[in-house]
Amino acid sequence: MLQSPVRERTIESERRTFFCEYVSMSATRDPRFLKSSEVAEAIGVSKVTLKTWLRTGRVPEPARDPRNGYRLWTAQDVDSIRRMLKAHSTGIAHKGGETR
Picture (cartoon, rainbow, N blue to C red):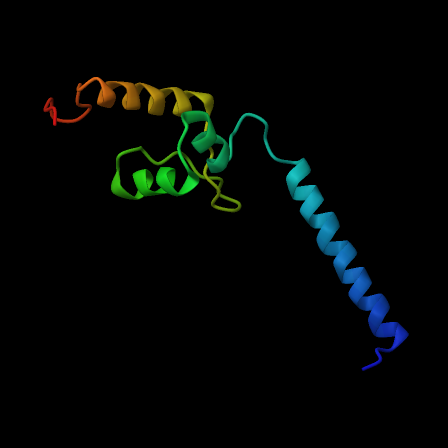
């Protein structure tokens, strides 16, 4: 099926607009914050594992960006998770003083 030249230009314009908005959003990301995938990589687990820990309360939920709901992870959050993992691996419980 042939498209009219006007429709082709409209589609191309929409693609360009979407790409520009995507690049703009990526370029404006605050460097003080990490993405969930970056946090997961830093602590040596998968993103799915990190999100499971969030859902079950094993890891505290970080602040969220009010504009888009993205998690705003900080270096302090990563350090806190690392300390929690280290405590758990050495048998020191972080809740209730019990070990498993």
